[in-house]
Image (cartoon, rainbow, N blue to C red; front, top):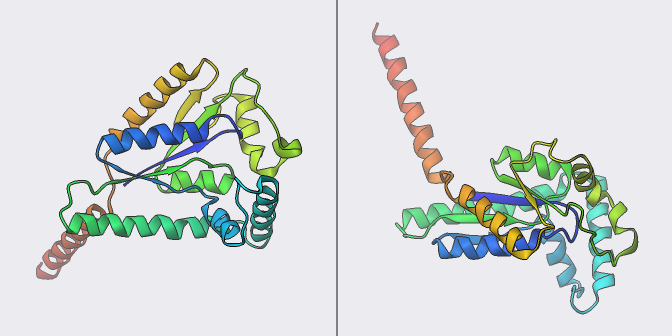
Length: 223
């Protein structure tokens, strides 16, 4: 399973990049899955009757309040919720491998990697971290103080200081859509060439190591 996470300021072009990555992955025979960190929050908002299309302001306020409330109690609350869904796709991938399916590999796509603990998780699970920079291009802002929200802090800092951060892929989005999409395709090419790490392969590796340890222990006991 491969995972790519997009970070950057709101309206920088993360979702456009994620959509193109999904199309490229599907054409390659992968199983693209959109799994934003905010998915549990958005699912809860939907169950309460708030939608981005019907009542955008109420929807945004509800999501912000819910996110901030849970994080004030446990900063990793939404990380843990996300990991549950992530692990479910690991299990699905293992089932597809056992069924000997031709197209078994998933590509998990996250288009809202914003907080430091999300960045840390990205590194922990060996995901590809991609920062979308707007460069000199002015971004539209229809949400008042949105740029000062805590979810924008890391992206604002990275955008201000350039590529001085541990970001694997840096994409500039200020030279037109064709150039931007070419850069996204280049990132996808790099991601697609990385070796898949599946639960099945990890179990095989662990079994081999345990067998080697057993052999060594047997040799020591016989000597």
